[in-house]
Figure: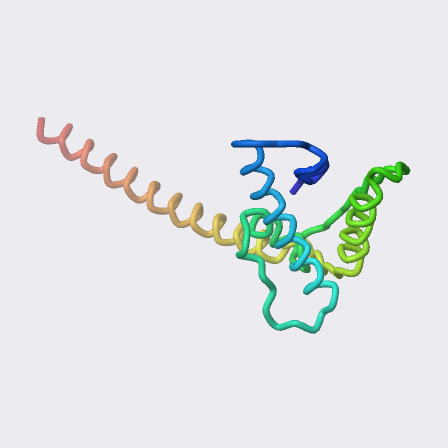
Length: 146
């Protein structure tokens, strides 16, 4: 998954109105839910993780302790004007860093599927050969009669 969470969604800074303002509210909701999920996973204590609270957390669910490698690039600004956004980004990054994924290659499943496909191919090949023999036999019988 590649997700770009860049940009400020603060209404005061963006001065957004109307449809853009509604969109920024939805983005902020998704980011808040992502923050909750990150906090829950980084604690490692909670039994329930709110991954279905937003589309963003649902999309990123495999990246939270699942069978995926996760990488995060946190971009911050040295400007005092962007201090709060930079601190929030660094907190996200710190929580994401605390999540431990146990990624593994699904090689056993692939080998099993390959073996099953090879067996199916062999059985279909035998069936084809048997039908081919029947067809040849019927052709010979027709030639003898005709």
